[in-house]
Length: 179
Image 1 (tube, one colour):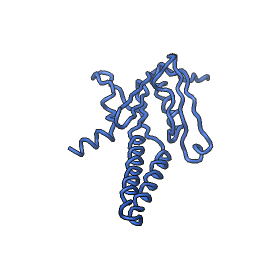
Image 2 (cartoon, rainbow, N blue to C red; image 1 turned 135 degrees about the vertical axis):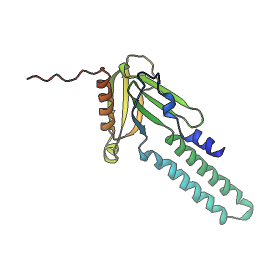
Image 3 (spheres, rainbow, N blue to C red; image 1 turned 180 degrees about the vertical axis):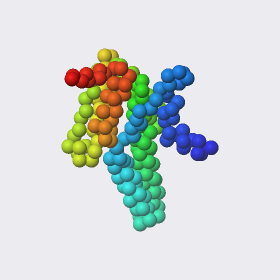
Image 4 (tube, helix red, strand yellow; image 1 turned 45 degrees about the vertical axis):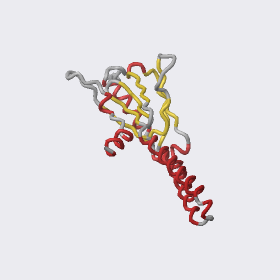
């Protein structure tokens, strides 16, 4: 039972979100997890929690409850932060791009490939050094649920994957060779 609960909290079940009609099934082109840099803050919060938690060994016995609970709370917050970053998935399929995120409350947003008008790739200096960037999707819709995707590892490769899938779906023209 605990294993099922853990799996439910940490696995967004990407395959359950694909169109399957037996004739022209949707195919996953890429599943993108966040770059490992997003785990730095949760790790630091958890380490701070461990340091605070260890203070209960050296403080007077009548006050030991405070560092114990504060440290435990910080470790739990760091764990929650790490798990919520782990569940955040950006998926490129043969028909759409979509994002699933949220640990306790699951949020989903998708955009058909044909509605993507423009993709902006932002590569900040520290992102170029560490190997990540950010996507901004523009579509014809005024309000959209899928706009900014942050901390995408190997962003140039992922951008080319989206372009390739759009081309294969007939949404991007193939370059005509002139002889």
